Length: 452
Image: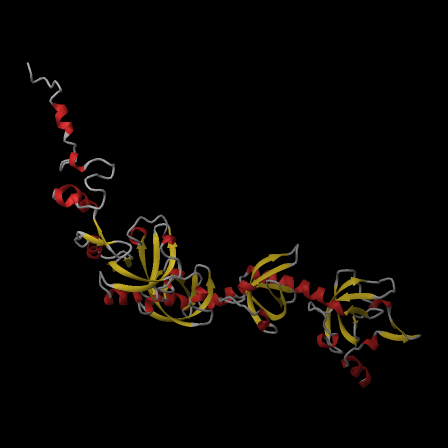
């Protein structure tokens, strides 16, 4: 009676159902054999671990064989790292009997089927899944959630992540944002989880932040049109035009990702949850310094930075440029600015207008009006001027007056052949006005209509 009671209370083992015959394990009673088919999920214990396969006892006439590549969704793993002897596992029947009569199983397929059902429920209920990062691939990482879940790089964090390798092995909590059973595709988002956690903080910031506030933040991302700054709960944008008082071609010229900056709140759009920030407003305005320092009419030195069709821009201080209009480049007409200056030239220009409100500085290379008028004035000319050889050279009108208005006696003392002129004519036949005296005798012979 005692033995019967002990047998009834003793836990049953495989020896109660199987025996060894001729080196093979066979059932004591064929009725105890489990019934399954390809695609079914079965359970069993690990009885042997080899380098490239694992044997599992599922209560069948032979152990099931799981190839190493069917143990896990991870690639190139050692079976010793995945399972232990005696571990109870589930596996999907790939082939009840292959060409060698073996039962082929897959642990990862069984895990996939169970995981897919669980993930569908999580996605429907808007819950989260969690798993370790097992692989870095192009454009993101793979997370083990019972199957291979793809987490795009843009959704790994709120900020852009440049080194995805740093997440290897980390357990990440994500939301399922896309599910496609036909393609066995699962897309995850960790950013959605982080944004949900920061939602309350973001609402607090949007409520309390006011235009004109000076706040601290960290540059989180750079784009062509500006820089995003993390304000400990929400990102604000510094437009490229608000980064510096100087001209900026790309935000990387002024700030870098991870840099702590002090910014001014320019605008808060609570409906669209957008914050506009300014960096240059927290730094000294070089324009204001110029306005306070210079006056119209003064000379100022600068460097030509750019030529345009209507003139040349000159940098007179860091962040301050003035314009020399093409009409102010020279006193004469100028077709193109490069006739007078080149980019990079150092010039000494005159300030002709300072428009502080419009932040415009007008310059000129032309001299002042007084200087131009002084230039045009010529000293009174003397009767005798120096010729090219250094001697005295009478002016033309003086020579004329000397030849025709001086006394007759002095003209006769010339060294040109007495009373004959250059043409060989007798000087005595000329009068002071240059006409020959014989010409008047001929006038009396003309009928001018006076004699009736």
